[in-house]
Length: 196
Image 1 (cartoon, rainbow, N blue to C red):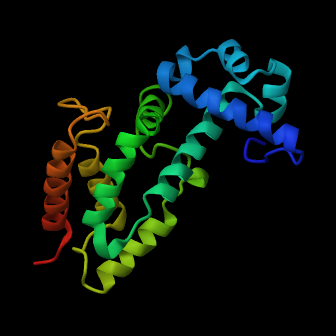
Image 2: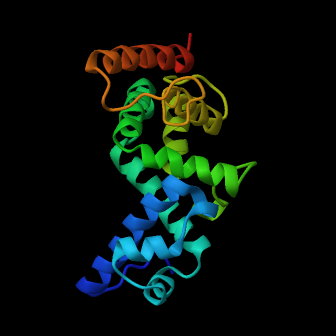
C-alpha cells in the first residue's frame, strides 16, 4: 500500500507531506517514540488520510525506511570498480542527510536487532551485490562473499556518521577536515578491497 502514491496531484502532495513529516519524526524519536498526531499536524492532514495512504504505523515506518534506502541508492550510486569512491560518496551523503543513518539505526535498535535490517523482499542490494560479484570475477575486488564486501565498505564509510560511537562528523565542520577524512577513507577502503 505505502509504495503506491495517489494518482491525483493533490493526493500525491499530501502523500509526500506525510512521508516527509514521518521521516523527520521517526528519525528524531524512533519508531516507539514517534507520534502519529505530530506527523499529521506537521503534514497538515488527518489520521484517516494517513492510515488510508500508509496503513499502520509499522507500514508507515517501512515506507519511510524504503524511501531513505532509495534515496541513498540514488545519491550514492555504486561503482564496484571504484569501491573507495563509493565509500566517499556514502560519507558525503551521511553528512548531507543524517536522517538516513538515524532511521536505519532506530530500525536496528527497535525492530531488527539481528540479521538483515529489512525483510528479504524489501532488500535493495541486489544490483550492488551483482556489481561487486562482477568486479570480483574481473579480478578488481578481493574474493569473498559480495555481501560481506558490501557490508564492510558501508561500515567503513560510517566511521564518522551520526551513529559513530567515537566521533560524529557534521556538515558544519571545516572542509579541510572532510577532505582529510575522505582521503583516509578512500585509501583504507582501497587497501581493504584491492587484490594483492
